[in-house]
Image 1 (tube, rainbow, N blue to C red):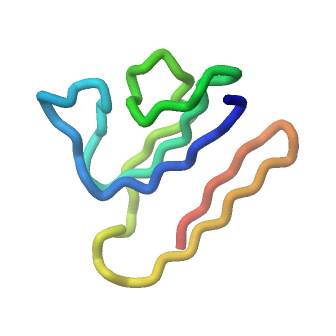
Image 2: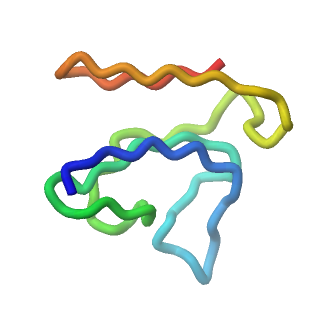
Length: 80
């Protein structure tokens, strides 16, 4: 409850898993269900704050660096 999840996803869930609604196999998403328990399904009625394809390949076996900041109003996620 009362959580926020940042997902670094290298696998595209496709039918029979339509609830995940992944855009591709290389994306970042921020999901929150507010006061309810969080859920990895992108179509679970939670807020999908962002979901974006990337300019880098997460599954390339390289070390990637992410920075997540929140100032009380703006959530920012940077990668590499």
